[in-house]
Figure 1 (spheres, rainbow, N blue to C red):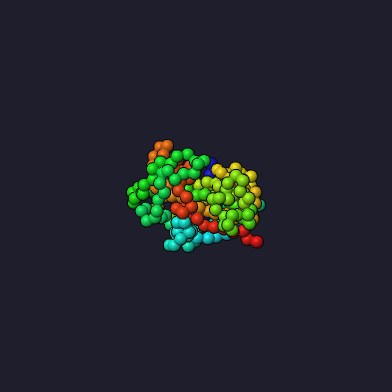
Figure 2 (cartoon, rainbow, N blue to C red; figure 1 turned 90 degrees about the vertical axis):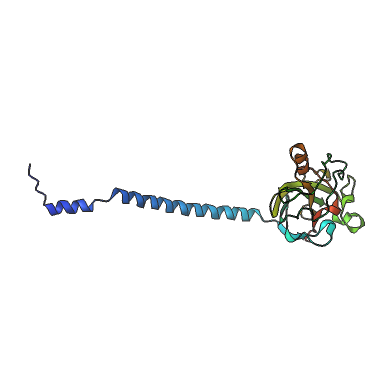
Amino acid sequence: MTDTQPRHARAESTRSRPDPGEQTSRTTATIIAVLAVAFAILLFLAFRAVTDESNGDVQRSGFPGQGGVEPALATDGAELERRDDGLIARVDIPTPEPGSYEYPTGDMVSPWAEPHPPVSPGAANAPEVFTLWLIVFNDPESCTNDQCDADDTAADAAARGGVYQVDGRVADGGSMSFVGNIRVGQQPAVGSPLDNPTGADVHLAIAPHGRALSGADGWRQLNGPVGNPTLWWTAEFSPNH
């Protein structure tokens, strides 16, 4: 059978056929572009959702030195968000240098707390443990001596104070971060439950526990108090009225 198609036509027909590899590359690039746009939209929507949720009253502060004296541990880095349903605490501060501050002793525990192991300073290669506490006073106007303190967390205290542990960390770097929250009605370790998140006086306290230990002792360091307010770093937040 004779091929009647001119040679130049056959050549032109061959050149006009799309390259399968090039077509696949273009399709892949299109898919990647579409996915990138979709991902960007999802990120935007997620950001909007988080922004919409974080609509509480946010207060910021630093941390004075132990017991409220100078020098300060940090001039900023403490944040308290007040919401109708509870409180959210966030902390991001430099890690105290081991040996640069006063340590509690292991027998300095509250009557309601479990025994604490012996406390010793850490070192460059031996990190230390710190816990974060929220101490709330639902009726700050009723605090004794015009100052809210441990006396106002007793069961029958008029200020209806309550003590909550909200986080604990082994600080193995130059900075340490904490985050925690409590809900309205949540039972504290001692005292009265939170019921006035927007009007309570709130103390955000960091307690040092010394060199990080292992096993059950390490678990206890991260779960419970040691020391007293004179050895803690405390940021105080008064209600915005």
